[in-house]
Amino acid sequence: MDDDALSREAVRLAEELVQSGLRELGKRWRCPARLRLRIVAYALQCREHGEAVADIAGRLGLVESTLGRWLRRERAEERVAAFRTPDMAR
Image (cartoon, rainbow, N blue to C red; front, side, top):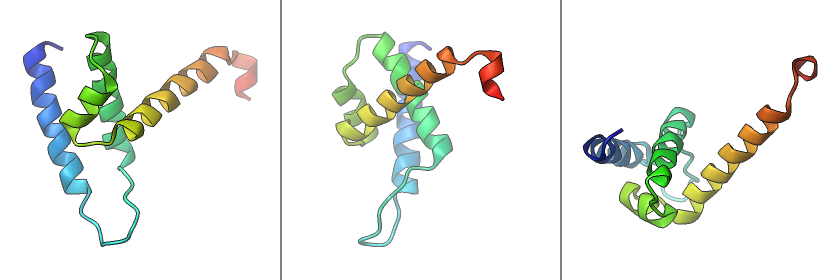
């Protein structure tokens, strides 16, 4: 993705985060799984361009620790999937 496309995607994701964040006071917010996957994919592309997690999170309106946790979870899942062999899938 080029820089303009990344910028447009950031705006779309930030808007969706705001819309999904509408909740009752005092209730815990959970990001919808599909939106979280799109955010992680976007963040990974930005990281490839050398951007800091804090900058990406700020642009999206997320807390840095939340985005960092999602990225760590993604890397952990990739490592687990890489170690599985076909006979382990049973």
